[in-house]
Each structure stands twice: as C-alpha cells, then as structure tokens.
Image (cartoon, rainbow, N blue to C red; front, side, top):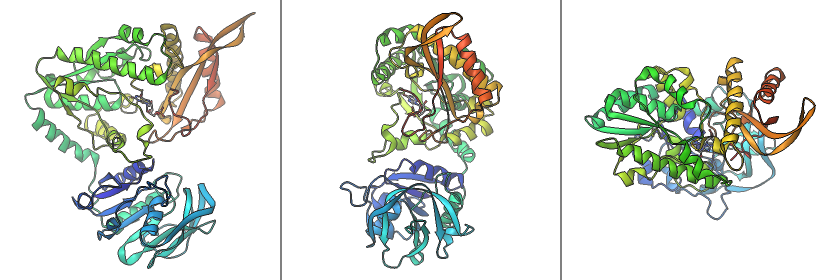
Length: 507
Ligand code: XMP
C-alpha cells in the first residue's frame, strides 16, 4: 500500500482517491504518525501532501526526517516538496511572484516521473513559498513560467516532488504523473472496491450471525446501500428505521419507500415531524438549529430502537472521508462539515457500532451498489441531502408555510432537471428560501412575497464546487414555473457562488 502523510491539505483526499482509481490501495495518515506505524503493512511508497503552512511557520506540520529514509519511493506535493527541500538541507523562501491557479510548467530534464508527459503542460498551483535552493544530490526536472522549481528529483534515492497538484483535474497529465509514481514504487495494482465487497460480506456474516441489528435509513446512497447489504446478510434480523423529521422534501418518505420496494427491507417509518417543528419554533441560528435537530433525532431514534428486542448492533454508513476528518491535523477540512448522525446513542444503549464502508469513498460505495447489489440509478446517483434537511435551506426560523414554499419550489426544480436530462450532470441541486420579502407586481396588484434561491453545483468531492452553467432555455422556464405555481413567491435567484469561499448549503 501507499501511505499519504497528511500535512493538512484539503486536497489530501483527492490524492487518495486518484491512487485508488489507479488500482492501488492507499491510506491517509497524520503527519505525526510514528515511524513504526508508517513502516507497518506492505508499504510500497509514501506521498507527502500539501498544506497551507510555510515550513518556517510555528506549528507547521513537521514529520520526522526518518520518513524520507525508509527506502521506499517518496513523492512530495506542494508543501510536500517544500518540506522535503527544507528537511534535506535546501532553502525555501517566499516567492516574489506567488502562483495560484493555472500555470504552465516546462520539463527541463529526463525523469521517470514524467514518462509520457509532454514537454510543457498546464498545472494547478497554490503556493506562496518556493524552493530557492535544491538539497544536495537533487536536480530540477521542471520549472514554472516564473522560473520557480516546479519539480525536482533525487533518482538514486527515488525521492520526487512537484510544486503543483497532480491530484486535481485542472492539472494536465496529473493522473499520468501519479501513475508513473506508482510504477516507480512497483506498487501492486490489486485494489478494486467490488472485490472488497466479498471481504466486507464475509466479515459481516461472521460478526452478525444470529444477532439483531438496527440502523438509520434516509434514502441516500450510503445508508441505502449499507441497509441492502446488511439485509442480504441477516435478513429480518436487521431493522432499518426511517425518521421523518418534518424537514424532508416533498413526498420524501413515500419516494424512499417506492425506490427501495424491491429490496424488502422492512423499513420502519416514524413520523416525528411535529416534535422537531415544535422544538425549532422561532430558532434562527444555524448551529442552534443543527443542534436541536441532532438531539431530537437521537431521542426519537433511541425510543424506536428500544422497541426492537435483542438489538446489539447499530449499523452505520460511515465513509472513509468521515473517518479521516476525525483525525486532528491542523487546517484539515474537518471543521467545514458539522454533520449530525446517531453519535452518542451507542454508548447510551450499549450498542456496538458496525461501519462496513469505513474504508471506502463514496464513488467506491456507488460501484458496489451498482455492480454488486444491482441498485437502481436513482438511488446510486441521488444528490446528497443534509441530515438537518430543509432547515439549512431556509434562512432564519423554520415554519410550515416556509417549508411548503421550499418543498414546492424544490419539487419543480428537481423534476424539471430530470425531465431535461440534467439531473445526473449536476452533483447537487436544490431550492431554498432566503430571508425577507421582495416587492413585485402580479396582475394589477403589487405583491410583497418570498424569495426563492436555486443552487446547482458540480463537484467530485463536495469539498470544492463550481456552479452549474444552465442554458437560458433551461433556467428561464424553471424560474417562471416556480413564480407561477408556488404561492408566496415573486422572485427567484440563481446562486453563482463557488465553494470555497461559499458552502454548498446556505446555512
Ligand atoms: P457544505 O454546505 O458544507 O456541504 O458545502 C457539503 C456537503 O455536505 C452536506 N451537508 C450536510 N450533510 N448534515 C449532513 O448530513 C449537515 O449538517 C450538512 N451540512 C452540509 C451538503 O448537503 C453537501 O452535500
């Protein structure tokens, strides 16, 4: 396996996903992991990630120099390049001209890392420091337009580094470069998530045999796939619970029931909407709303779970990114998401948590869902929906009337995207309700009504996202339909903010 030493970059997960896509198993470890732990397992190579720090910053993520002496090939990326230079006696300094975004680089010397890579190519950079002086024994293998060291190598020790980010799509030849590195490592190309499936099923069979398990199901791909899987292993001894918190989209419970009908999951539906809405009355602060919803969810889930005799396991669809995000590396993306799940419940009820997908990325779970479990497109490729539901799509306090507006507008938006064949091109789309009201005219009368916002983004990892470019002939009729058909709305806006700096949800 390849280990990725995480120095806190938001792109570390992208490196892992790319390497796995190339058929090699990889794990992310914090920069301060001990050398003994790093050496464990079949270590074939090490990647050192980027990070937002300068090597001279107090508290910059400094891994042990020993990491570079383990005898396996090394690839440093961005901060990874600077830290290698720094640790091995080179010089890093602030650049006169910093490089952010698209930059051109030119190869200057032969390198296995650039096998089959053109002599100059576009890359994506994001750095303020540069390697001013190479460590002894290193040579420059590419330079940027500003004549900065864009890549360097020390062939004898198989240490390579790049200043740019080969793990992002905007870098030409990015995949080829990572592929070349895996070739240098002689890494075994045996990783295939669908093969992992057999291991997961085997493990579950052994663990869950004759036992009773419960789980939450929301209709999203993670909880649906894990439920179908566990149901295939222990059948009726698995009890999936669906909690309607009153913050769901139009007819959500019915749709989830319909779409999973063929799998005979025996889902228990609990309508707890009144409880949630009462608790949320008058609450405007987004964090407060999330907290209330989280607590209430646990309370409802616990009440229901207690009714299930003999349950000892709680099944969760936790994915690898959730596991990595809980590892404290400063500056990592851990603070971006404030998800709630059934945390706190297991200890209280003495349940053991089982997370069959904790080593998988979402695209790997999707592969299993499609290829191994035969799950339909509309579940596998369903846009994500946040746990706190429409409460984070209504700015300010939540009430039935606002929920009605959002539900109707969202339903028009999503059904139009389906009808126009755009739904699967977009990673996540929704309608929300802005605070305040706007003036309009309808017929002869003036109106003073709600403002609906539409959001549609394209993203691979939901860490960064771009807004979807609609054709006027698509967005125009959608806006008209919402204004004409949803009572209480006289204005619709389309959100063209990128993430970062904006988030996907509004709250
Ligand atoms: P943001 O808004 O952070 O969203 O750019 C990134 C992804 O996470 C989802 N999201 C949540 N999911 N509970 C969830 O289960 C939450 O509190 C939450 N907040 C955001 C969001 O829908 C998007 O897919």
